[in-house]
Length: 353
Ligand SMILES: Nc1ncnc2c1ncn2[C@@H]1O[C@H](COP(=O)(O)OP(=O)(O)OP(=O)(O)O)[C@@H](O)[C@H]1O
Image (tube, rainbow, N blue to C red; front, side, top):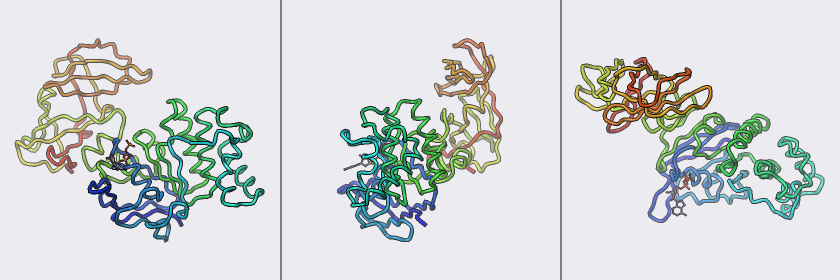
């Protein structure tokens, strides 16, 4: 069994602490995705697991082994980076087998491992080519192949798709999901793309400023975020947030013409400020004086996104599946079912439950 366990993991660069006391359990065979905004420490945490960054204190285990002070090459992990760094003068086959060759593996064993990886990644037709004769997506597949032939217990991916164009990213995302299904190894994947996180992960770890904000399955984080940060980060387009005031155990939303929202969550005392969160697909608009204006409509085909400006300047996005002809600049009434609202403490940003 080769899950990964972090206990009180801390990373400091000099006096600057960038990873704070991380406790995390990644189960054997799990696809775990680290997400978070730029600079939150995703890559650092991955590199600590890989052994490419020293862990200042705390413990990292792979399966039963404490690998905290173990050399990267001895950890049983293989890493795939954003830049694939293939050897330009070697063929695909030689690139994939190179690591094994350097470790003195017999030729026949290397050939067998490379052909197995090539089968999984559908690279059979390209084995004799040099990297320059491959597309970006094919090159990244070779880089993944290089990781597979090493037979690691844990695969680590550091934003492997961010150099690819949008269409290829989607294809490669599907390939990586398929690869995980086929080989069933533990995989840890870093991205700042929440769509990648949602579609690939069994478990998402949301990081902010070196701290775990929440861990859970994609739908757990989407349906039941612990705080405003996670609620705003998971889901696309992002959840809308509006200022509200508690009154008589309800919430009044000034920017939507003082719409009053009922809820059975535990609200703070009257007069307190709260943040009301509601997802774009739970809002509908109709012409009328409801305190908001349709600023811009973005048509994507089957769906449109309506960008509204509500009273006091708050912005809202509404997902619209109708063929609506309402002109931009119209005054609109925004409707929603109260049960779809979430509430957050305005100070701590924690979810009110
Ligand atoms: N060698 C270093 N010395 C000092 N600080 C560093 C060093 N490497 C990284 N950091 C800092 O650690 C923090 C986390 O960086 P990291 O690269 O892990 O973030 P990230 O979430 O992967 O960001 P991105 O998505 O932009 O790659 C950042 O604030 C960064 O400036």
